[in-house]
Image (cartoon, rainbow, N blue to C red; front, top):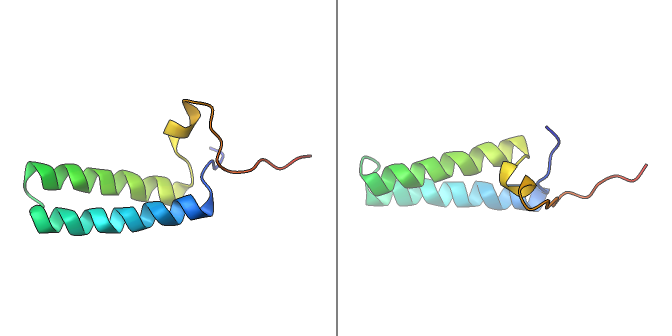
Length: 69
């Protein structure tokens, strides 16, 4: 997998994941809303750590600059 997320996007995803965990705890982690928010936090964390987002492939968007040979 080639990385298609820039570092600023990765940082933003980690911040959003942290806020989502806080929100899940605030509403109750065992509630339906809390579980949904925790799943979103997990997805954001996974894509931030891997540097790859499969949704960016759908519209053909590449947010990371390609190196010219």
